[in-house]
Length: 186
Image 1 (cartoon, rainbow, N blue to C red):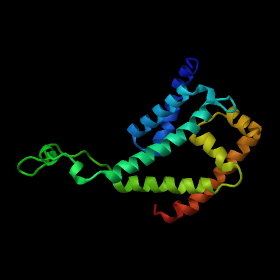
Image 2: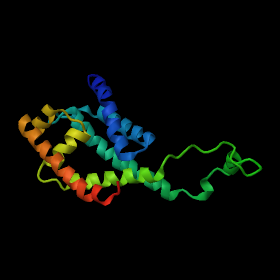
Image 3: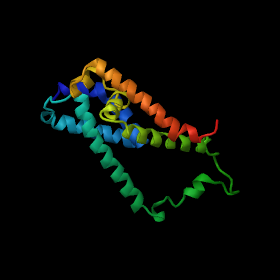
Image 4: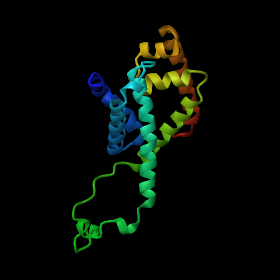
């Protein structure tokens, strides 16, 4: 069990990055990663070495992410206005009705919305890639698995991997041009 701890600590930043991409909330992502690492430390015997440690942890993390999303959805649906701090207005506004401290700049909400929409289109394009191309692309670009690890898991050669990744990128480019860029003004 103690042999696993240094390796888990080394993989923690990658797991956190993956969780942040999914949850877009640092606190929730940290909770999911902590629960993942705790589960791995509590039951190291469930890692049978049938895959890479990182792949096994990502599998656990995916379940923790779903749990986290369900938990947050449940909390949001059960909260009511009475749960809010009663003195919140007094904390935020002075007696003259003006802000005590001006709110932070929210940036450009429209641009943020477009970014979220873009990633939805990208995700749809990846899901529509033929054969294993979508899986390979996700493993390499989103999960950042090494070439050797992907080749070992899928029993393919590095050359075959690179050809398939090249084709996936070409198909993604075509899909994005049709589904995203063609409908947008320059």
